[in-house]
Length: 119
Image (cartoon, rainbow, N blue to C red; front, side, top):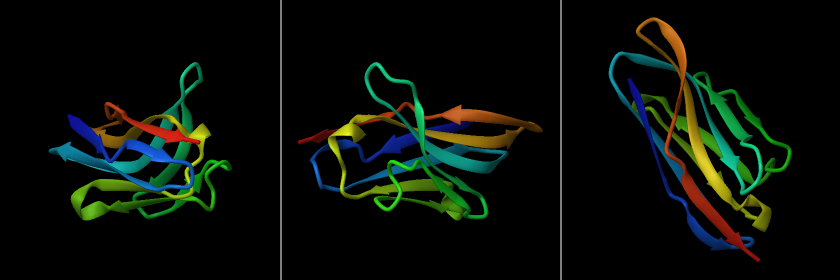
C-alpha cells in the first residue's frame, strides 16, 4: 500500500503564501505522477497542479504564475508553493498519487489539509 500524508495547510490573509507538502510512504511501489487537487465547500474537487516523475508540470489556469509544484523523487515527497493567495483559494487541498503497486496502477489519496484565505 501507499500512504500519503499532507502538511502545511493553515490560515493566511489574501496575498500571503503557504507551502504544502505531501510525503508518500510504503514499500514496493513506483510513483507515476503526483498531483494536488482542492475542494471548496459546495464545489467539486478540481485539479490544481500535477507533476510527473520526469518533472513535467501542469497547472490550472486559476493558479498559473502563483503556484509552483515540485517533487523530490528520492524522498517521494511533493510540494506546492502557493504565493499571492486569494480568498477563492480557500479549500481542502488533497494530495493524489498514481502509483504501480503489486503490478497495478492505482490512485491513492491523502487525508487533505485545510487552506483558508481571508480577505
